[in-house]
Length: 391
Ligand code: PLP
Image (cartoon, rainbow, N blue to C red; front, side, top):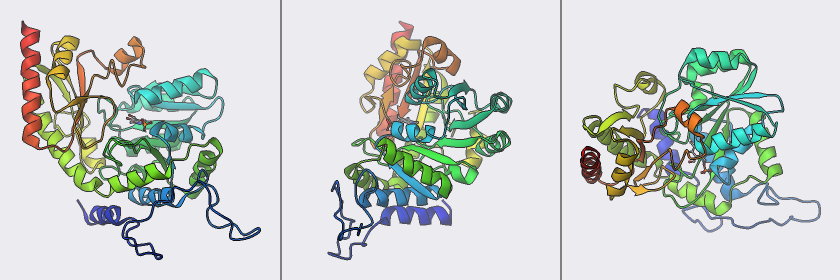
């Protein structure tokens, strides 16, 4: 971690601390109020109505913008509300180019809106610059990037994508949910908008649903604020408080998350029941070099394919005890998912095949439990799966 990252870690811990001049509350008070009184006739205060603006939500927005290096952040009621908000930059006939293995909810929303004629969508393999350039050359107005992608952890070269976006005069949006600003800051690589599901690592405790859009410049931030208010996408003050509490420990959590994930990636790679492991921290991962240059760490999401296909995946998922079979990711607790039937169930069979999501693919959101306990649990799950597939 360099000096600037350490300073960001400190600012994340201390966001809003000791700023209450009225009572000296060390932790910032939570403003749940729907509305705020006028000081007198025609004398509005800074805030009037919570959908439009709220001090607790603004405190979160300010630390998010700071950590991402953006001009400002708009806090939304979910990650999908953040995706919806960023999509307001598209007009009818505009083309958005997204990743073919994007998050299932984003896939559903982009296609759903496109089917109603709100814009056009093309989903491509963004790791191939030629394919990406060809899609952008069709007059794209937005490029939607996930790096690493979900669930195959493909790495997209952000600086190169920026160049392509610039020549196409397209906005570059990066969903940074998988890494958080502790491990990747897309604005430094040229992103115009950074989208988050704060439900995940930023909050980190799997006890709320929220999102955010961080804008690189004032004009875009103004548009995000305007549309969040007009569409009613703003996040709740209580969820903002929870997220801010969670993000104070973001940097230390990410260290333990990553330590556990990289140890698991090693043992998975060496195991005979496993066909392929997708983790950008592995030197064998095709995006390892790019990840090393644009990320500050490799994160804690990983996927692997079991040789025994769906049957082996089922046995593995039923055998592990420290990995809860659940959607979502980024919490302190380890989770396991079967993308084809869970997170990516919205994909039709053709899109699943095109995205490379097989029946034997298992995705792990590696938590911050003791490393040895997780290793032991995954090994016993693999042994059980291997025994069933060979019988
Ligand atoms: N983006 C990514 C990469 C996600 O994984 C998710 C949810 O899993 C979302 C966006 C949507 O976030 P939310 O569930 O908070 O609406």
